[in-house]
Image 1 (cartoon, one colour):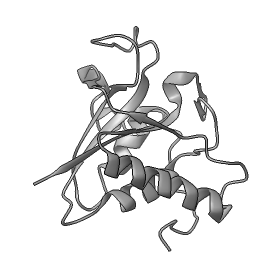
Image 2: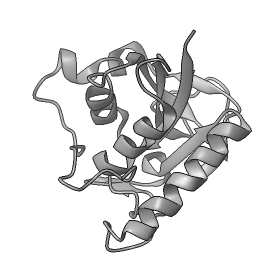
Image 3: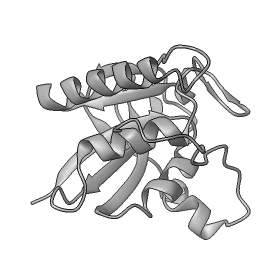
Image 4: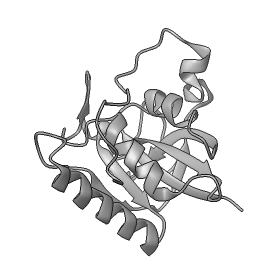
Length: 163
């Protein structure tokens, strides 16, 4: 049995490269979520965030550990921005598929804010997942295919929010 979560934290290339390496993560797919049109493309995705669908083995990791990593590998205090990428496509968002995911995300945001690890409050949105749309093939595994490609994602040297 597997579980799935969809997260957005800026450009999906860097997110995918970091999440794919985590123990228990079985598969990742770059795509779009939270927008206004069906069959979004890189050139036409109004309201969609560049997102990452993460399929994981709940016997080897859990949602809390994935969310903890998420809040340390991107800056959740920047509204509609990560690095040089600016606009709502690059917002920080958690697309929850059920009430358990929504609650876990809400609790993690409270932990992150209470920790004062970031200088500003978290602006990550919680949005119901209506549909995840896979991105074009050339976006999948992008940094594997283009090792010198752009990324603004890295694991910050801060303690876990689970402690």
